[in-house]
Amino acid sequence: MGTVAFLLCLAVIAVVAALLFRKYNPQGVLLLAGILMVALGAILGTSPVEVDRPTGSVVFDIMRFVEEKFFSNFSRAGLQIMVIGGYVAFMNKIEATNMLVHLAVKPLAFFRKVPYLAAVLAIPIGQLLFITTPSAAGVGLLLVATLYPILVNLGVSKLTALSAIAFATLFDQGPGSANTLAASELCDLTTVQYFLEYQVPRVLPVTVLLMLLFFFYNRWCDRREAAQGKDIYSDRLDESARPDVPGYFALLPVLPIFFLLLFSGYAGIQDVTISTTVAMLSSFLIAFLLVMLHNRSFTRTFPMFKVFWQGMGNVFANVVSLIVCAEVFSGGLIALGFIDTLVTGTTSLGFGGVAICIVITAIIFLAAMLMGSGNAAFFSFGPLLPGIATQFGMPAVGMIVPMQLAASMGRATSPIAGVIVAICGVAGVSPMDLAKRNTPPLIIGVIALTLIHFILV
Image 1: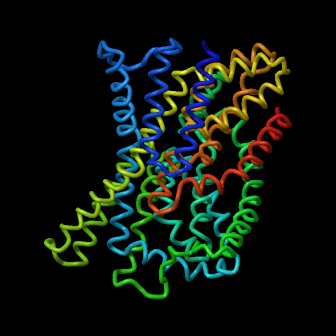
Image 2: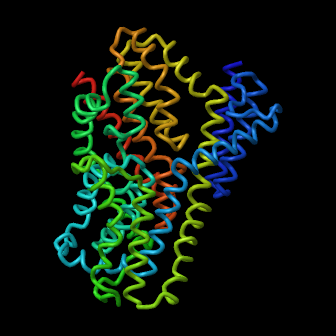
Image 3: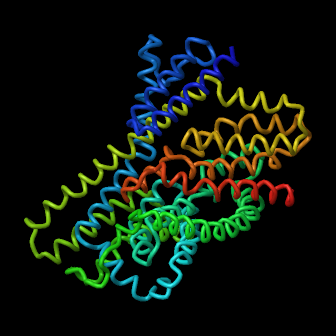
């Protein structure tokens, strides 16, 4: 029965890929595919429909499964992403983004000669922010509001700027990461010990390699697309024209980042911690009051609230809905036993421990690409890994570390990943185009990660 379910998964994946390639609505495709696989899992007996509150009917339990995915995503990440989208829309409306570009581009004029160097340097900056704020989509949208317009105006293409932002969220690392917490528990280590002793020594050299690959590969891609006559620089702002707003408005797009860093626990302020949503809402209210003081009119400023709500609504329609449908799809893959069959088939190949680790690392990278989630991919494989490691006489950490990092790397190659969908939705770029741009260097990155890991173990 497991073989039949696995073949059905492959068939569904092939149909989904074909429909997405033909530009069918991705939300509808993923939702229907996920529902189909959950239903097939129940019929074949590979997995019952797992819901927190069963309805008493398998048919309605499937709908309940979808409902719970909406609730869990909205409460966990959906509201956060929507609030960020509303804030970005408000920043554009009050021309704060234009002022940021106007003031930032002049001192960064050197990078006009080597704009790809600016994009490369944005990667480690974003990684530091990602450690303090472990939400890939959230950090991606924050960087779209701040770094993206600056990079584009320095001379890189939209896709290169977005790729730099995606690369900033490549590694789920640091004590605040859910994947780090899960991996450290599986390895019987503290999160700080796991981060400092196992993640950092591997992430640093891989990041340096990826920065080099990013520079040359993206420059080559942009030159090729420009030679084909594609308009890859259409989002540039006219930074020479000063917006008709006060200069301090340039601080508003980065205000949420300031709050997040100040109250992250890393700045020495231990008594106050805030979420990304709280930082965004606080920044929005401050920005709204400053706009009202600048306009000296409550009646002219108050209608701008509508811009914030519209920004939230646009992000829900284009981003959050896709994230939810992608999670239903990944839930369907799990329900049909796709992940379990992969692991079982891999461990029965007769390979040694190192070979099995390499194979499963590659599989988890591909699983994250299919599922659009590093967390879903690792959480599906993670609990099985200590047992597999023991079976081959390896320490659990020797098998878990590359797989945990590969899962978050695979996320950046997925056109249905939350961070890819979120940043592309704001910038008006196809998620498929960005996923294609990210994939070649990240395949090399995963290979390098695996080699470095076994050198260090």
